[in-house]
Image 1: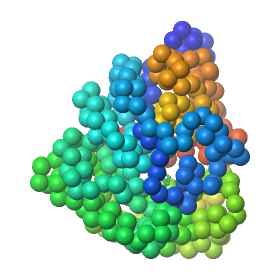
Image 2: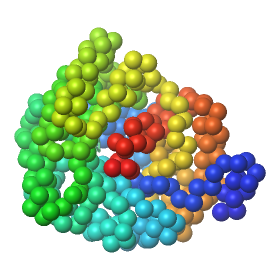
Image 3: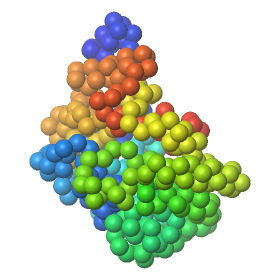
Image 4: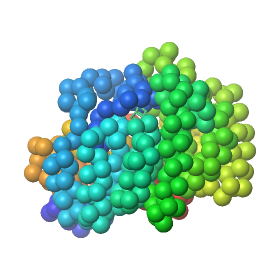
Amino acid sequence: MIVALKDNLVYGTPFLPAPRAVAIGPAYQCNFRCLFCIEHSSLEFQPGYHYQKEKRGYLQSLLGLSLFKKTIDDLFDIGVRFIMLCDGGEPFLHPDIFTMIEYVKSKGMKCWIASNGSVLDEGKIRRLVEIKLDLLHISLNAASPSVHARVHGTGNQNYFDAIVANVESLHRYKELLGAKTPVLYINNVITKSNYLEVKEMIRLGARLHATTVAFETFFYCKGRESLLKDIILSAEDRHALQQLLLEASLEAHKLRLCNNINQILLRLRTQAQLTFQIQNPLIYRCDMQANGDVYPYFFPTRMGNVTQHSSFCEIWYSVPFIRFRRRLQRMARHKQTYEGYPYCLRCKAGELDRKLCYLHY
Ligand code: SF4
């Protein structure tokens, strides 16, 4: 705390009492093997990534309910009001996931959850409406059963229709119960395997009553060439994708659907895939994984573990974490890029129009 105040007075960097949002990974497990997933495929952020995860006890880990509640209490006390349940796997595989959501909501905090949608059913969807989850993020990445099976590495075309049927029931239950939430946010990571469907993804999003259909480009990769061939877009693919995105943008406009197509087009045109300017230095989000490790959003720099420290706050206010934030703040002020990390701080709050951002819906 003293170091933070000194930072403010001496270096003029703003004192950050708390991260704006904290993402907590309830389960480091997944039933899918998405082509682009760095956690559950053979791709790696950097050499040795999976080995390190295994060594640190991530594999198959589930966050204990009592540790989760204690962390939520800590976060509430320092002023965090937004909890995202995502990271590392499929959160609905955690047996206590509904209790976790209810606990967050009982504190008056906003709660957002990201899922591949495959372990939901109508009963669970209804419960999400009843417990007033704020936002349901579905990673769909396809607009047809065959592409879904390929992109998600399942080889099972039945998943797509089942997920779509479940998501359709969300709107029905919201109407039935007179609820405005959960807001539906659909995300699609664009790869060579699915880019031809971007227009259909927009139409599907509108049919499912999504508030936003967002796209991501795949940009980090280490791994066997054989894995990348279904992911990386060639120059011709990128050219074709630009045209398809323009058409998708017109479609989205007609359907009054929020999207981030302009940002994706800009990224494709400028080839801005490998370096990112530090746009949002606030470290507005901080991540805690299922084994208790705490990271700044999008940086593989482990800052501590909640099972080894007395609280999350102790890690947030630790000298290394404050120095890390200070460094990014300086870089942002000088509009520097963080070339050491190609996936650097590509945060949605900085990149998307703010009104599309899930923190401001
Ligand atoms: S659903 Fe998510 S966690 Fe699971 S394999 Fe796909 S990207 Fe990874």
